[in-house]
View 1: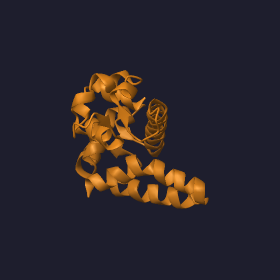
View 2: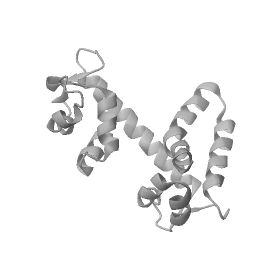
View 3: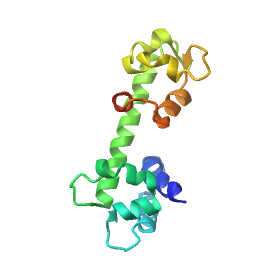
Length: 159
């Protein structure tokens, strides 16, 4: 349940925002976000403490210091929205870089195409989990999520 809440707050929020933009239902997205925020904010003070995040959203707790930009020890709705917007921007930019590198538009990166993304190229063999000499988005995402990617690789890939 905790991971589900974090997933909804951090991962699904950009998708919900996109859907709201497409459907004109920003009010519904805000209501869902408020509901999810309230589920984590156990004491109802309008901030998610590190303890609340650890209890109800462990993955959020892992990124707590990145999200808590004003360093007050609590995550506000504004900080979470800013963080999800930054994640979405990074995902969009990385997706554009992948698309540009995929010269033959087959949805995969060959070793040659991966050279356009040096951090992926340097770790090609580790990322290529099925050893077919092609990288697909699932392999890249799995590699980044696994924690196998050194922090600089994950950061560079997200940019």
